[in-house]
Length: 197
Image (tube, rainbow, N blue to C red; front, side, top):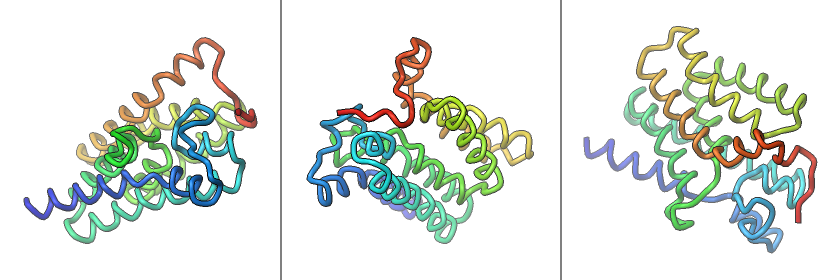
């Protein structure tokens, strides 16, 4: 039990590391939280600084989710991997290093999904990319994937604990995108490719 608690705290702290803030500050002398949407995530980095830094941030955020899930499985089996997935995403979204603020957790969630259920992750990636390509709304692709995650886990007959974890990750993602959803409904959401100041 103590080992589990310690590992989940570590997962949360790893999730709390904001690669968007670190990379943008160190290499671009930019506090990403002061520009665009103010969100320390790869989409805002893309709009403010461009493709290269956005891809670096996305990859780093994805890897921290994937690595913590794989370490959780190694040290404590599948149950710890599932709990770690939620902990690392919570850390990213409500970072202790950023005053319990953070990104929206899509890249980190995707990393955990790859580690836990890669087949579902591949399907979600394809659907998400198609939605973004057609609509040019990154948030719509993210929300679509969040909604489909627990549904696909049910379709592929994953055990209940996997479905609950997927549902939890999906709910967190939708909650973090609540303002985007309002803007989408009002037709005011920024599209992919729009540069912001």
